[in-house]
Amino acid sequence: MSQNQATAYPPPPASTGPYVVPPPAGYPTKADQPYTQNPVPVETKSRGDGFWKGCCAALCCCCVLDACF
Image (cartoon, rainbow, N blue to C red; front, side, top):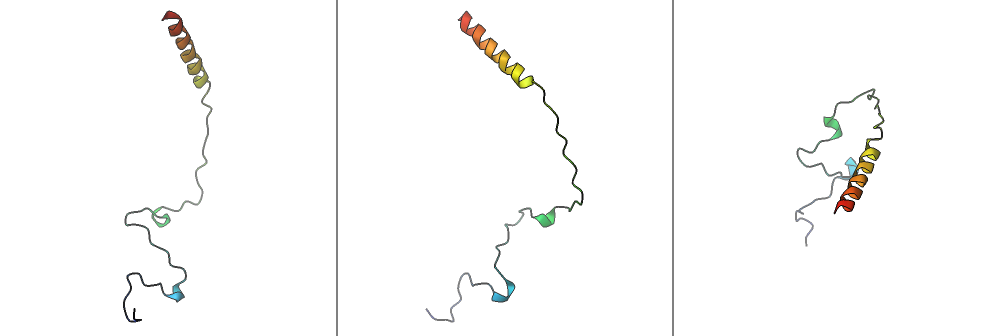
């Protein structure tokens, strides 16, 4: 192979630093998002004991259905 042939993927110029592949077209980047100085604090709320009430109710239904059939 001679030195004058063009290659499919030539190496990047050495003066620009490491080569970074750009994202696909339409892919969101950090530059697309607005900069926020103070992010809004996240509020957490207690969900209560609804899960355990539902669990106990399902268990009772299973026991009743098992006794009936």
